[in-house]
Structure formats: C-alpha cells, structure tokens
Amino acid sequence: MTIGENIRRIRTQRGLTQAELGRLIGISESAVRRYELNSSIPRINRLEAIAYALGVNAQVLLNADFDNITTMHRLFQTFRQYGGYFDDTGKLQFHKLNLSAWRKQWNIYQEELRAAETIPDKQLREYAIEDAEDKFNWWMDTYPKSDAFNIDFEKSLENYRKLKNKRRDKGNT
Image 1 (cartoon, one colour):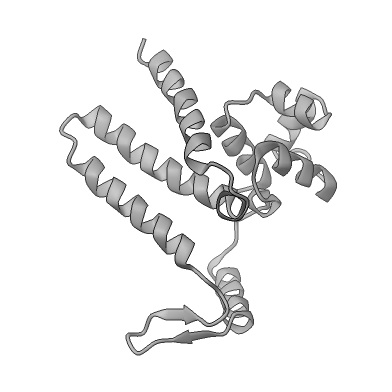
Image 2 (cartoon, rainbow, N blue to C red; image 1 turned 90 degrees about the vertical axis):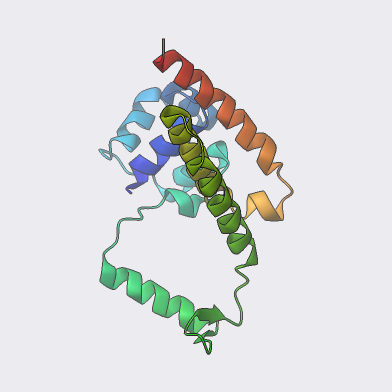
C-alpha cells in the first residue's frame, strides 16, 4: 500500500474525516486529500504528526509496496540483525527478536476466524470475519503502543467497531 492509501485506511478506521485529521495536525483538508491521493508526499515531520494523530507508528504509514526481491532482502537483514536461524523442524526463529506478542494475536485472530465460519447467516459471518481481520490489523498498526504503553487495546478497538457498525447500519437502510 502507498503512504496515501495507508493514511486513508487508518483515518477511516478511526472515523475521522479529512477535515478532522487536518485540524488535528494543523493542515488543510485539501492537503490531507493530496496526501491520500498520492499527489503530494508528506515530509517526515508531517508524516510523524499524521501518525501521532492516528495513534500509529510512523512506519505503518510508509510505503509498503515492495517486490519479492526487496522482501527477501528485508528478511535477510532481519535474519542477520536478530540472530535468525532455522530450528530442527525448519521453522525460522530469532535469538534477539521476541515474536510472542505477535504469535498471541495471530492465535486470537485464527480462533475468531474459526468461530466466524460457524455463523450460519452469511452477512453476519462476513461481518465477523471482517471484524477479526480489523482487530488483527488494528493490533499491528498500533504496535508497540498497544503492548508497550498500556493503551487499552480492547477499548480503542471497541470504539472503532461502534463507528464501523454505524456505517454498516447506514449502508443497510
């Protein structure tokens, strides 16, 4: 995703308009629109202000569109920097990188997907799957704040879901 796509995705998750986000960071609605349309790229200090206003790490907003080769080289760098190795079962492990929080959230996500699949009503099942995906993405977008800074992850997610349900209700009327 591009920087603009990430800004728009998270802004709408937070239930903010472009004008509201602009006011939070001291810029115009049209400037936010230009960022979201990728016709203008925010400088690093502005990107950090946007990230702060949205409650995410600035890294979340950065352009994440990269090809397989770039992905492999980022993995190679991570492997070197964090003491990567393959265990006896062939699974990638790291000596210096604790992935337990990620694994915990992944397991919760998988449980929620399995539970959603048992819902007979198609629309409700789709909503439950979407909610599980949102929750996992929300956790990734707010990491490390959601873990390290005692932000009430469940409460912030609940507020987002209320906004989303309002949007769903409007779409069904």
